[in-house]
Image (cartoon, rainbow, N blue to C red):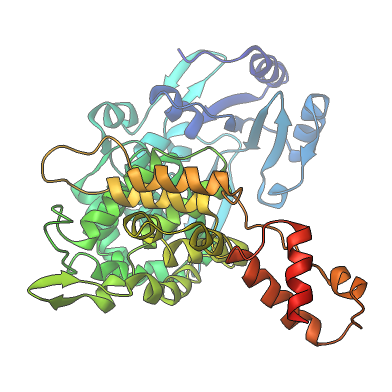
Length: 457
């Protein structure tokens, strides 16, 4: 029996009282048995006379959303839960892409027939909250116990190209092994160009689930590689054949290091999805320039300027999955400067170096990236307990008050006017020169800045 919160009990009993049979399906049921907490519910309603009657029955419980209503889905936010109500349905592939389906609604369809349209057996488990009975026509519970990801129907699974990426993120989130039939289907779909049918928004959502909801995103990426899907996300497919110097990277290839660094960063997530997405995507792409810069120097592998070269490569890669310019512009500086904390620490960089760095990148985020990069590898001997370079930079940046943002300019346009200058096109050049002097610590207060300015005019 799945414990149902009292507010939901009132809701399903209300529907049952009016002759509608509610069955909870999909993620809510699955997540109960995998010890994951979710407040999103899908409820299939059997015996619904019409959507208009359903709307009337649901109105006392809150505002009904119109999104999806044209597809027979009514959304309701109620007592902290986001609920999708729909009659059971069947789907037939009619066109291109993941939306090319004809949907037929059947208010009295058998649950087994309705569940056949679902992708994986673990998502085809239902629960009758009135009779307190589990419905599992395709063995999803056994697959959960055995940690196996298996499709419901091989014939219809291939109809939706998005299911390839769903397999990737489900395998990672629930630490499942893809069964042979499913793996073969996904390989076939990729070979036939399924991923090219997907809009970037849907690709991004699946990567978002992979990177933010799994403790080990590497599981999903390894599966994507096994499916043959990495070539669609090139040059990720080149990381595995890009070697690294064994002394600093005993784990081997750039691919191995990237996966380890990504899993390490997953342990640093804060729960703020946008901040976490920036850092996780940075780790996925932080060494994306190495396939193009790795050379042998003095019998050693080296990748000079791989961070700099990786910026444009990462920009192009990110454009494949998102149009979010703000997100991209936060990621690129982190890639460009991901090696700076260790370089600064080794060279005993001065405060002016740190001040200038703060104008290029958020130092607090950069430290987290560098820390995941440092620990995301194997070590000869014992693993270090601390990341000394990060601790040092954190202390210095905090003391300079530039951990999260650069220093504010001490000289502003009004200072130039007060000194008798007439606003002109020269103002910008003067202010930029003053700010550079500030970053080089020529002055530290507004009064000192004014005195310096007088000497420059």
